[in-house]
Image 1: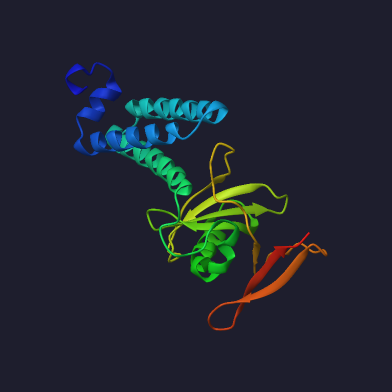
Image 2: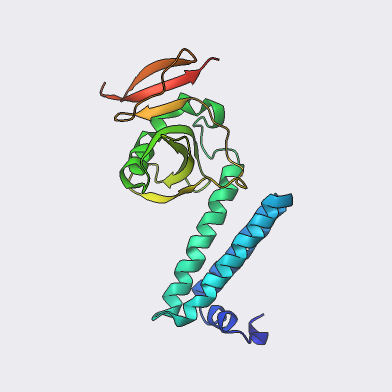
Length: 212
């Protein structure tokens, strides 16, 4: 490809070993994810990829075009890899999907990181899993029950990303709802409520399991 490159973006990618590697990794991740989708979900992914390419091309106007390209490729690659990871079985023995709360202690620190850094005030976790990269994926919801997806380091050191749930994403199913301390859990006869404590006995929230 490089010997025939004529467009600015192609030449810029070819001129950097690091960006060239990111370009190859991104192409592989995009192709793999696209092969798992169909219909409107695939069309949405294609549209999102076009948006990425447009953002990438805008890097030619950046003060540091090389840094801009590295960031654009890294962010897009991470997003694709996270979506692929969510489709795979968890990379640890931690429970996920409907049984995720059985391993709630595994996710405590990542939950705290998402609480601390998320731009939206969410109130409950509905699912969690360990990604292939060893991070934690969380499905959370706000008081209006809008869904969001948060990725954070398992040790709680940092939140990697936070965004509204995309209907094209294939994510682990919801299970019990965990309301961290400070959130007001749902009330009603359809829920069994259990107060959750950390290893030191400190209350850290409420776990609600539906039974209706």
